[in-house]
Amino acid sequence: MRLVVDLNRCQGFAQCVFLAPDVFSLHGDEALLFSPRFDEAQRDRVEKAAAACPVQAILADYSDEPTKRVEPHVG
Image (cartoon, rainbow, N blue to C red; front, side, top):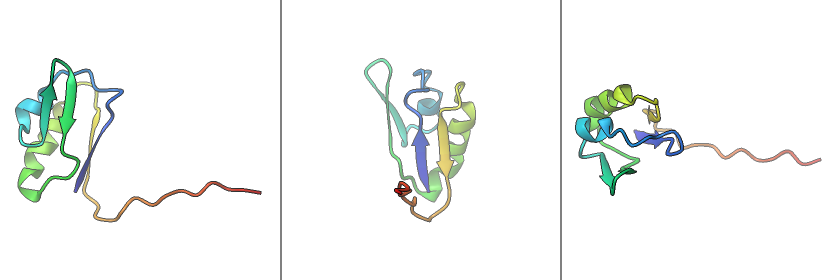
């Protein structure tokens, strides 16, 4: 399981911090810090945090497959 957060979309409302404090935290007033990998025990909290994000900046990916790199087409 991994977590993806669009930091350009994040507005620092911190709902995720309240719902999953072991995964999310605020540094300063608005800088969101998060752990991109979390264990199964945090799954419910992370799902609630993602659902509570007012700007939908959080995505939890439950696939265990690594992300494939896309090669540019030359020629």
